[in-house]
Length: 78
Image 1: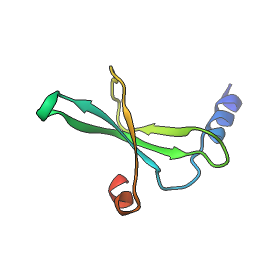
Image 2: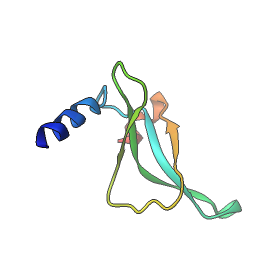
Image 3: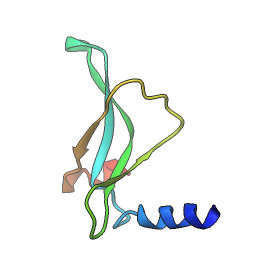
Image 4: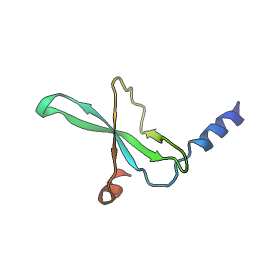
């Protein structure tokens, strides 16, 4: 089983050390709504899809958003 787990981890390895998206969820409604950062996402090298890495131990009870990181925001995403 450890071989299978290791294989899966290698397949999901991000393509670069810099994330391509930031993962956020919305909290609140209307004018008081705000976004809370949950983690980051990486484009997979030569493959479709994204590798999402959440920080901490959140309980996600609703959907979340993936926002692309622009070049001038790259440092803030880390």
